[in-house]
Length: 400
Image (cartoon, rainbow, N blue to C red; front, side):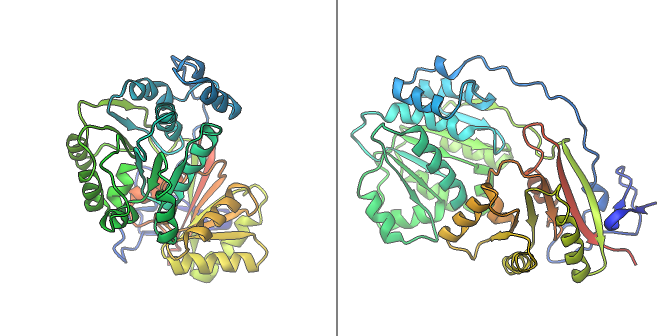
């Protein structure tokens, strides 16, 4: 049996008792996901902190790089940094299995920056990422760590003027950070040569496969020297990922620090809505509560996400939208406003939010139910990080 509580929330037995009420409708290619899978009582417990074997001072980095690390407030490395950096420094190929938000960007950037000091043959490092936002995040970290070291990185992603990117490439930056589609375009135009590359980083490899980038990645890697160091990061190790690592890496060492993304720290429940109008009213009610401090709302379509964000903004709830129809500058501005808490709410599609590391999200609201349970896991993984308790609500159709 189920019981309706405040704001239309309904409690289902998490054992999966298949009551007819509140069932998830199968449409638009969606999986049928029973509402009980959207419910979880958060477990509050003290997570044992990771005890690193090194401090950042122990790593064989130069004085200027160590100064930049200290200036960022880094003293003790995270698990992926602690375990991967020594192997990367040695020149080994590495498979890093780690979630977004675990510090993996610094894990590969720091040894790369150290090695690039004084390198004349440039560019020599290629970092491939699934999204424009992730490329920007990596670039921003590079700028901080490489401060004063006379190094340059270039971002090459879609949605931005390609001629400007070509001019940047002609300055021979040390690092190129890009998304597969734009990298492939530049290679085909002969504006990007990979024959002198010594290091390849494939970040969020599982996401790139999900997004259909496998042919592009194979084409890009095929243009690189076989004698190189390859660093491969993924949140999961699927059979497809295993095949790729076998093709791209030589005698790799695997560093696994991945944790399940459906955190037990996330309080999950469902909220019943009669129709779209009622759903919007319920969302306004939730956002009127001051406890909803930094809220990520997920919708199905680019158009629906933009419309919902506009409706919230007009009703006095500061909101931005992030989706595939936005150009890079618009997406970056929206993301920055949300990160810096200039707006309380960001409405996003699944693809646009992939790979984003946004700190201190208090609530995730699934305005539209996710297409698959895997998408649900990814969505709610944006909250409840670092041992904090997060909250996730999923709107479902009210039973007749």
